Image (spheres, rainbow, N blue to C red):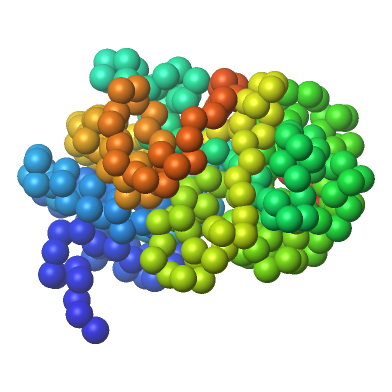
Length: 351
């Protein structure tokens, strides 16, 4: 097997056990590190992100050492490392996880006029963490079985008319928990619990798999409507695989709540870790990710929308999906309802 640790400065190891075993050689103690390095912990697993990191290194001379794992695994690792953690920046793929990291005290403020001006206050938590990309939680339907008028809102997912037609991934996943938390923030715990009961009663099958699996289940006739992040659908739209194109031909995206508050928006983002040994580099890196060039790369590479206004993108799938009304709810507000959302999911059997 090729030794990628020696071949190039971008170092990626996946799996918590491997990370724990190799942490010392991968990330030396702060005193031993070269001044031109940045240690990045990330839960984002996209090749387009790797290309961004290489651009940053080319522009600044700062090498990025990447430790990649799931959100929860990274949070546990950072807590176990404590004050000795070599991590500089933490990137997470959902607002619920960003707030969890904030509540654990894992971030320190990043004082940056550029970040504060570029990223709307509703998409960040003060100066502790910053949303860097946005994605919508959309509904995907089989128009032959479910008419768009039948699912105009998230509330419609609990309608008796959709009995046995709804598919979602497990409610234990951050994407679903964030959607439930958003409902709590908007309408309170009691109404959200009643809604969740209705959704569970309408499930076509036990939740399993990821968002792409839910979309394909709609195309195959297992479900009539599914819940998915927008970029998964856009990814299928851009695929050259005939099977993926067949899925798109059989399905349609519905933007929920367009006559009301708008479609639920989530973020992927990050911040400077509390014990970052290279916090100046961390600031430069976060500012780079908020640059128009990087924002366009996020959109073009992973089908996410920029958080920075005025960024020109060249993504045919995002263009084809069109414009829609977004829920203006501050990300940090609904993310603070995560614990309540988890309790509702458990109570209603949304496993």
